[in-house]
Length: 258
Image (cartoon, rainbow, N blue to C red; front, side, top):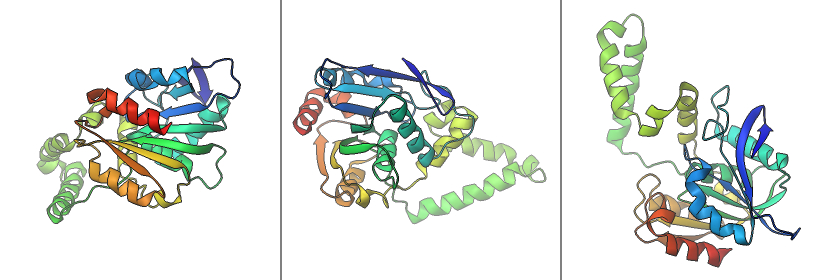
C-alpha cells in the first residue's frame, strides 16, 4: 500500500483489520535501514487480534528518500504525519532500535495529536554511549585530521590518511547509505533522548536481548530507570534482534504485556 506524507511516497502495510470497529491499533516503527519486511515474524502473529500498521521510513524499503537530511524531530513529525494520513489517532506504539528513539519523541510531544496509552520498545536507541577519556582524545585528533584532510591547502599532505581513517571508522550502515542518508545517520545517532524519557506517560515495556552490542543491555536498564513505571524484559541469548534468536520467549513476553 502507498500513501503520500510530506511529499514522499510511503510504502506501508495495514493488516489485521476485522469487522470490529473498536479493534486496537499497533503502529510499528522499524530500526535504521531495516524495512518493514524484516519484521514479519514480529507483526504477523499480532494481526489476529490487532490492526497492525507499519511503514518504511524515508529512504528505506519502498519509501522515497528525503530531499534533505533528517533529524530525530523530523522523524517524529513524519511518523505523526503518517498516522494522520491513515486515520490513526490512538495506538499501541512499538519501536525497534532507531524506531524506539522516534517513539520516545512521539510520546513526549508537547502538541502531539497521537494518543499512546502503551508502548513496546525493543532494543531501543536513544541513550548516548559512555565514552572513555582515550576515546575522546582520539575523537579530537580525528577531527583535526578531518580539517587537514579536507582543506585545499593541506589536502595533498593529509587527504589520503584522512580517507583511510574515515573508512576504518565508518559503520556498515554508514558506508551503505547515500550522502543524504549518511548525514541523516550522523544526525540521529548523536541525539540524546534521555532528557525526554522522564516525560513519558505511557505504560512502557522494554524488551532487550541480553547480548546486544549495538544498544547494550545497560541502555535498557537506564531507560527502565528514567521512564516512569517502565518494565524491562531480557531475552535470553538475544542480540539486537532478540525476536530472531529467541522467538518463543519474545512472543510470550509481548503477549503477556498486550
